[in-house]
Length: 125
Image (tube, rainbow, N blue to C red; front, side):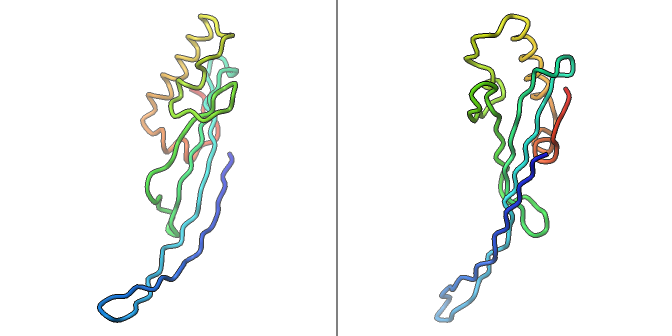
C-alpha cells in the first residue's frame, strides 16, 4: 500500500469585524494518497490500479470529497472511469475483452469502492 501523508500547518488570519481585529485559525489538515490494485481472481494478469487522494483534518475526518481515478493499463494516463483503462489497446482479443469487462463489472458493483480505494492495497475480485 502506498500511503503518502503531507502535513499543512495552521495559518492565523487577521479579520476586521466591526472595527476590531480578530484572529481566525485555519484547521490543520494532511494531504493523503493511496494506491490500490484490483485483480481478476481467475487471471491475475488482468489488473486495474486506482489512486485516491484526499485531505484529512487532525481528527482523521475527510475534508471535502476524495479524488479517485484509475490508470490506463498501457499508457499510465489518468482515467476517470475504469472502463477507459483498457480502451485503445489493439492487442485485445474477444477472451481478453470479456475478462476486462468482468473485472470492470466487479469493481463497479463494489458497494464501498471509495473506502476500498482509500484504505486497501490489493483486491482480488
